[in-house]
Length: 271
Image (cartoon, rainbow, N blue to C red; front, side, top):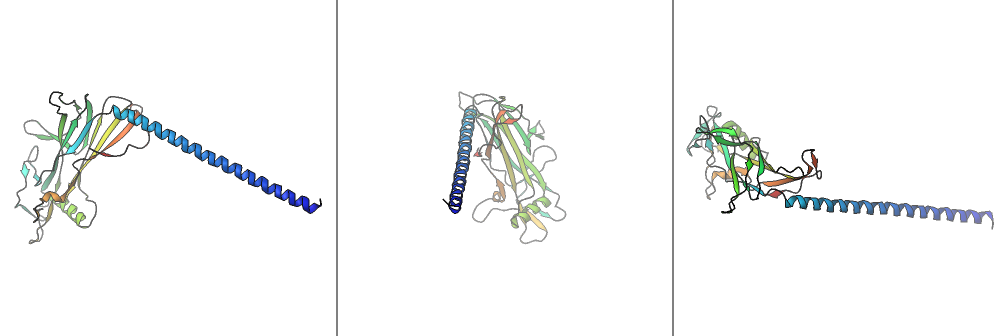
């Protein structure tokens, strides 16, 4: 064979070698992908199994809001708000802009399980204390199980409550009209766990807000409580809240060492 023939054979061999190398590399990459996918599936199965085990022993607690108080409440000199602002009351600006309105909703926490759990309250969650019903931050008690004879769950009741000035609620009204987030809100967090180091922590984030006042349609610089609608709905329609706030559950390998089971909390569930 002449030199050209050998050159052609060498080129074909080189090309074949390159194809073989490429195929081998592709097989390695594909096998690596399959291995990583199998590892992820195995990890997901292990996490689901661990979550299911922790779910089986988790606190059985629900959190709900009662309908917010309406009409909105006027402040008392001491203690809890006395009662609603009169339906005929109006605020003339600037004289009445510093008067205050309370937004309030009762929060009910129920233990449907068979052992005590620890409850922690943060934010605008309060409770009346003493004969004068002075407002205090809600304590963080143990919530005992329900009564077996009656089947009733153990329960705690606190108030999600905060006051803002009429001026601040006019800002909420203006934000609502502009389709913007309301700047003044009432928020609180309920956190529940038992004493187990390897367990779960359940959290409910509560929100109550709204624009309970509106401009008087017939008088300038005058604001009134949102009235009932001609079709029947009360002024409570001006409030934003969730009667069954979603629960967020975090799983822990060790709460003491701050080692979560995985980086992300479990999907949100109502109640």
